[in-house]
Length: 302
Image (cartoon, one colour):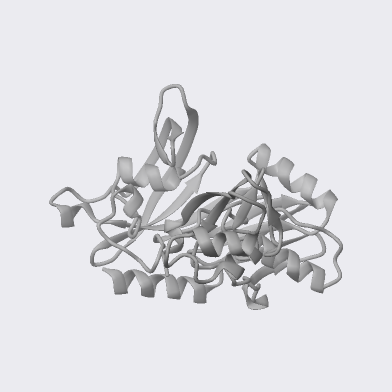
């Protein structure tokens, strides 16, 4: 089957009224029509900007459907309660593994962290559909914040908007010495303006302010480990700043890394938050066993 990061898209127009299942079986290319039921019931088929989940739904003559196919169709992501790092009556902070989306994507409605969290809340009889107030790129692992009621959701989103929630990341960068260059800097504050050109972030004088701080705290054989603090939240901010001003994050082939980690993973982890909430400063940190596993993967790669 095909890599999740290489989602395939197909447009199919019905010549006559046809059940969706049969339409896909007959018109998808060989190799992509073997698991049509899973493609449909996962939410991978769209018509008029809406998902169609029913295999027997009739597609009328001259109507067109858009089909997204990925490896995780037919699967449901389930939250392991051991991955709930913090929880009280108002919010929960959950570990997201790499190669998992925070939100649903066009190819699957069920294989993502938000679906798993809301299924957990439903099982706990908590009548609230949660939306994460922080997000991580699919290849990045670490902590994500979810509210558990409407009042907390409003307060948390307000804190994000005024940049009161402080985020701490850890990143493993390739060493410049291995590429014939000088050592990576011990400390670097980066302030520039960026925009997103397609999917890739780049410097843009007319873009939005981006502000990051990199502090080196450990050197391995072929990697420098940095604490990274961001003061703005632009798309791919840390990944771009590392690659453009220092060296690429290990595994981040999208921004020039010569290494590959797993199926789709970069050596970047959201390690902690400071959340000023209800007259308390919640200091939430990723437990050590996740960091141990992070180091093991880096050492294996390099």
